[in-house]
Image 1 (cartoon, helix red, strand yellow):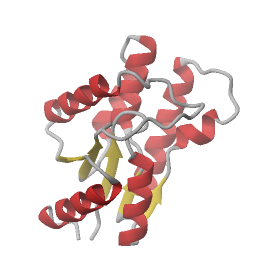
Image 2 (cartoon, rainbow, N blue to C red):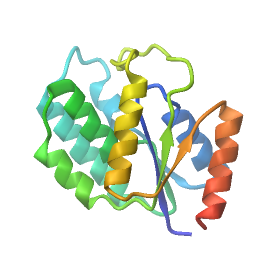
Image 3 (cartoon, rainbow, N blue to C red):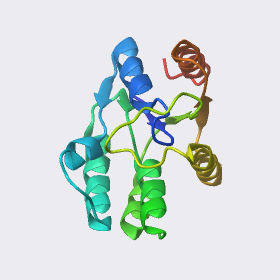
Image 4 (cartoon, one colour):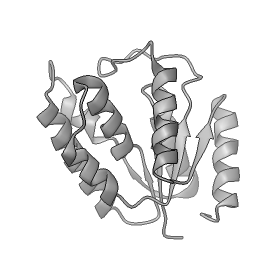
Length: 167
C-alpha cells in the first residue's frame, strides 16, 4: 500500500510515541520531526527558523518512500507559528496547501505532560487540540482522534487503518 499517514496534535500528546510504534508495527518508512534536530542546543528561535524547519520537514515528508509514517507535518508548524508570533506564515500556509497526506491521526492531550526543553505550552494543550480539530475539519482532511492509554491508541490506529483500507 502506498500511503502517507501523519501524526499531528499539541505538544506532549503522544505523536512521536505512536508514530514510532506504527512505523515499526507496520514496517512503514518513518519520518522524524525535524524541529527537534534543528533546535537541539539552541537558546531561542525566530519566525525564519520555523519557516526553515517547515521547508525541511515538507521536503522530508514529500521525498519519503511510501508507505510512510510522518511524525509531524504542516498543521503542527502552522499552529506553532501562530501561537508563537500571533500571525500566519505565507510560507507555511503554502506548504500546508501542497502537502499530500492520505490520513491523519490527531493525538488528544489526555496523557500527562512530559517536560522537555523544546516544549512551551503545558497549560493550553486542550485549547490547541480544538484548533487542530477546527483546521482539519475546515480543510476537509480525513482523521481519527487518538485518545486514552498507549494500548487504547494502538487499537484505535489498527482499527482506523483497517477501516480506511490503508493496510
